[in-house]
Length: 147
Image (cartoon, rainbow, N blue to C red; front, side):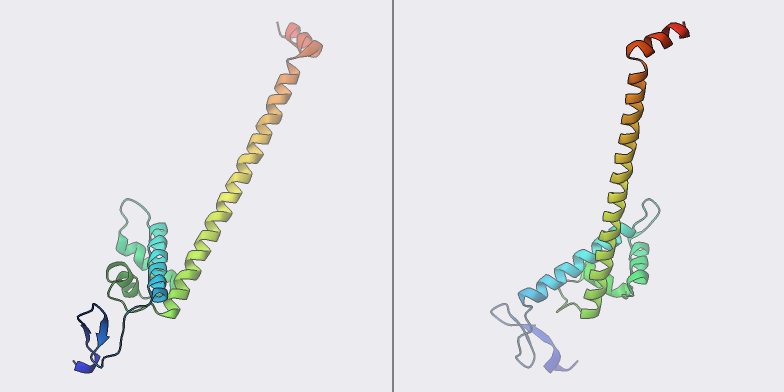
C-alpha cells in the first residue's frame, strides 16, 4: 500500500492523508451520511416481511429496487463511521426510493381515512333511517302491526 494514500490520525484528532491533506468530514458530508443511512434503514424495515424473513433478504430486495449494490447498503449499516462520504448516485437513489415509499404510504393512509369516513357516513344514515322508522305515529303503527 502506498504511504501517500494511507489515512493516519494526527495528534489533534483530525484525519489527514499521508500527503498531509485534511480528510475530515464536514458537517454537510456528515449530514448526508446520516440521511443516507436513515433512508437505507427505513427502506429495509419497510421491505422486511416478518417471521421467516432475514435482514439480508430485505437488504437484497432494497438493492434490487434501488439499483444500489447490496454491499454498499451493508456498509452504510455497519461501517458508516469509516466512510468518508456517500456517493451522489447512491444518495439520490436512496432519497428517491424513500420519498416514493413515503408518498405511497401517505396515499394509502389517505385512502384508508376516506374509506373509514364513507363507512361512518353510511352507518350514520342507516342509524337515522332506523331511528326515524321507530319514532312517531308511523313507528307506532308498524310496531302494532308487528305484534
